[in-house]
Length: 463
Picture (cartoon, rainbow, N blue to C red):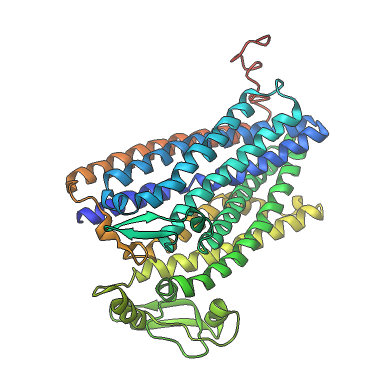
C-alpha cells in the first residue's frame, strides 16, 4: 500500500459510494415529474399520495447524494494536487459550470417543489419538478464533460508542462462525451425505473389497500425501465465501437485478448485465465461476436494487449500500459449480464401489466422487489470498467495516474482519512437505508400530503 495506492483507494471508494445515489436521483426526478404531470391533469387523490410517497424517498436520496458529492471535490486539491495543477485549467471549467448552473438549478427548484404545494399554481409546481429533473441531467452532463476529457483529451495545448484550454466548445464536441453521456443518462433512467418499480412491486404484494394507487406508477416505471434498459444495450454497443478507436487497450483488456485476433474475432461469454502467464484454462466463445461488437460486421481484426503494449511503449515511452485485466474483464461481463436481465424483467413485467395479469405472477413481483439492487451494481461495474480500464493513465496519453498524486501528503494521513470517511459513509448509508425502509413499509397513506409544509405545521397556513 503506497501513497498512490491509498489515494486511489480513497477516491475509488468515495466515487463508487457517491455513484450509488446519482443515477437514482436522475431517474427518480424524471419519474416524479411524470407522476406529477399525471396528477395535475387528473387530480386523483391516489396519484397525490403516491407522488408524496416517492417524493420523500427522492429527497432522502437527494440529500445523501449531495453530501457525498461535495466531499469528492476536496480530493483533487488534497490527494491529487499534481493532477489539478496539470489539467486544472481544463478540468475546472465544466465543474464550475456544473456547480454554478446545473446544481443551483436543481437545488432551487427542489426547494420550490417542497414548499410550493398549494402555493404555486399546479402547472408551475409540476414544472418545478421538471426543472429539477433537467438540472440533475445537466449536472451529469458537465461532470461527464470533465471525465470525457480524461478519457479522450481535446481542446487543449501544453504550455510549460501544463494543459491549458484553447477551445471550450471542443470539450462539448468531444466524441467520447457523446457516447458516454447518453449511456449514463439512459442508465440513470433505467435505475430510477427499477427503483420505483421494485417498490411498487412490494406495495402490490403487501399494501393491498393501495394497489390501485401503486399500479399506474408501476406501469410508468416499467415503461421507463424497459425502454431505458434496451437503449443502454444499444448505446453501450456504440460506446464499445468508439473504444476501438479511442482506447483500444481498454477494449482488448475487457476481452482479455492477449494477441491480435484473426479476421474473425470471437467474444467470450466467460473465460478462466491467468493474467500473469496469459494461459486460458477454459473459454466459452461466440464466433465473430467481437468483430460485430467492434465493427458491426462479421470480419475485422482486433488488436491484442501485447501488440498494443509495444505500440504504446513506442508512442509514449518505456512503461507498462496494460490495465488490471481481471477487474476490466469481469466488470464488463457483469454489466452486460445485468443489462440483459433487466431488459427481460422490465419487458416481462410490462407485458403482465398490459394484459392485466400481474396478480397471477407473485413470483415475478417478489423477484422484482429485490431487483432494486441490479441497476446500481451494473452502474458500478460500468464505472469500474471505464476507470480501471484506462489505467495507467489519469488523463489518457498525457498524464499517468502515478504522476497525478500529491507528492507531500504522508501515507498515514491518507490512510486515516480513508478509514474516517469510510466510517462516516457507512453511518450515512445505514441512516439512509433505515429511513427508506421505514417509509416504504409505512406506505403512501401514512405520510399523507407530507410535502405540504402548512399541513405539517412547518409553516402557518395563513403565511
